[in-house]
Length: 194
Image (cartoon, rainbow, N blue to C red; front, side, top):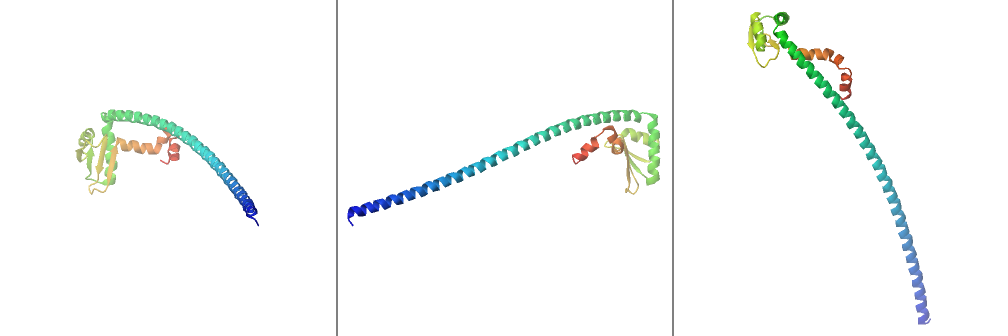
């Protein structure tokens, strides 16, 4: 075989290999492009799904924030009403403390306490109440500015104490009947986990 024929055969074989390599490269490139398109499509779908989830959560959060704002306004309104009632109650109790009926009230309370605790109780009372209790001959009475609107009695052995003060009485009454004055508050507190 002549050199020319050999060169022609090698050139033809190189052309075939070149075409095969180029065809394989084109096929590989097309396959990579298709995989890339599929991944891009999947990522786009995932991004859209995440955007919808975020929008849904944002909407839910906005609704929850609105509900919490309304609850807060209602609770502030109820709190203001309760504070007004407490202020009025304290004013009325102070008037009651200046009346002759207050001494009768304290005497009845002392009798109940003496029945349960016996003699020898020690009493800590606000200055006005201490004065009335001393006039009633209540025993050991200590004027104590930390006690507000009433008194605390402690048995002689120190095991039992009794409180007869405005705040404790109001708390007890509120536990017993407060929900009647503020319809729906008990349910609202239960829903909020309080």
